[in-house]
Structures are given as structure tokens and as C-alpha cells.
Amino acid sequence: MARILLFMSDFYDKVYEVVRLIPAGRVTSYGAIATFLGTAQSSRMIGWAMNNAGSQEKYVPAHRVVNRNGLLTGKHHFGSSTVMQELLEAEGITVVDDQIVDFEKHFWNPMIELDME
Image (cartoon, rainbow, N blue to C red):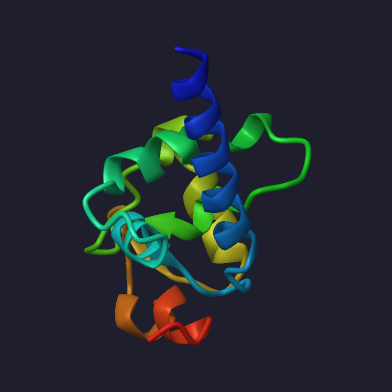
């Protein structure tokens, strides 16, 4: 069991490292992070990591991680249902009905941006 917990901790640390690289005004998806980390089928684990992002010593801009369609699916983990949207809008991203407007324009793909293709 301790080995599994260590793996999860190491994995989460890698996720947080990637999320910290997302520039203000840009967003990425759970799946894009999973693919970048070589675990393409682990989008849900990326979501679990984002759920724990607020407890990290070093800030993790979890509000910049959304689902593959640009929906704010993790908004209920920010203490209020509007905080995630407010943080994104403060960075110049428009959100309507919990969905990012011009998602493709704001999308940050770690495979491309971090030159891994």
C-alpha cells in the first residue's frame, strides 16, 4: 500500500509541475496532461490530482485545467461554483455557461508548447 501511495504522490508531483507551466490566459485539458505524461488513459487521475492541488505548498493554478471540450468540470472544488470562472476571466478568458469561449484559441498543449512531439 505504501508503494502505491508513493507512486500516486510522485505522479501528482509530475502533474503539478506541468500545470505550473501553463501560462496565464491559457488552459489545457486533463487528457492533454495525461498524454504528455505518457499515461493517455489517466485523465481521471489528473482530475484527482487537481482536487488536491489546493493543499500543495507551492501554488498550482488548477483553474487552468478543464475538460476536453473546455467545460469547467472541476469548478465545485474551488470553494464556490464561481471561483474557477472568476480566476479564468481575470486572466482574460471568457466563460459562458461554464464553457470557455474560443477554447481552441486559449488551449495550451504541453506536447507542442514543451516541444515533445
